[in-house]
Image (cartoon, rainbow, N blue to C red; front, side):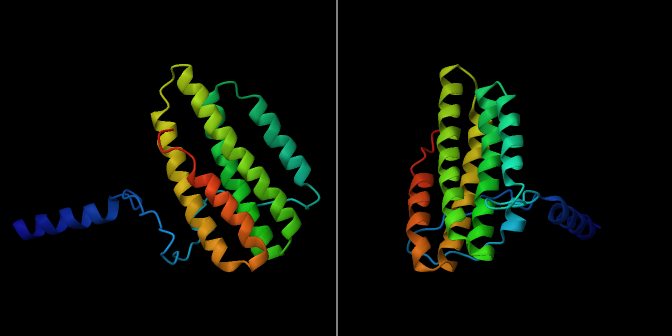
Length: 179
């Protein structure tokens, strides 16, 4: 009887334990990055319209209006974290699928600006006396995923694109972990 109870507890634990409850180790520069599936990593966010598409400006207008209507710096940081994921997925699509390197560079520049906004908004929230712990932890977890995706993209692009990816990786890794 004890064996059956132990078996049921183990099965129950295996089925209902959150899959991502353990943090993935941060890849080191000397390690070969693991293969990353951005669809699974960032689901339900997908690239959708990308820079150069006919309705991309409408998409950006909608995102800017939404961001304008958010008044809390903490909420803006959360929103911009979602936007950073979108920009990175757009970059991936542009550079790996469309091979549109000019628009990929523009998207990567927008991504870097979004990273800067996130850190500024979190700092302002801290200065205002808000508790930023939860948002900072979520943001840093997303940055780790973005870092893994950037390393994966780096291994798949030709030499002309690697320098801009290295710049973005430096920007991403320079963000203080004390957000």
